[in-house]
Length: 158
Image (cartoon, rainbow, N blue to C red; front, side):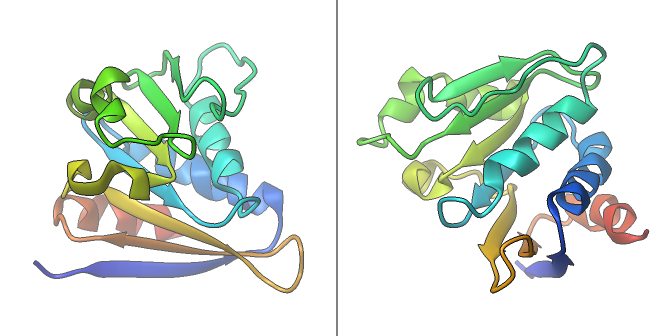
């Protein structure tokens, strides 16, 4: 499979939110977005902006650090936001219901390395990196599934 990638410089939290807002409408049931990066890199902020942009009635979107998974009704499909940082065993992914959610919802997964072999091959990867300027982030989108090609071109064409 051929890998595709796009790297962007996001210069402030508002620009990060705008990028998340451009991605949100192209997400469909069964899509998995894997959010990786160090603590404080902006993964939760990005996920929060995706979720809020798809809600008819705005509500608070807390980090799922302690609950592990939060679910939200959205326009296109239910959204599952998971933070797997505290997961100690890959088998816990089954108990959380994530395997079914990978097929029946839109899933935003922080700390996706915890998925191990359960990582969906068709997932969209987003790596967030902090830069020298504390407000700047480098966002690298990667995918191998060709379904993302047309969908992502619209996200980057601004």
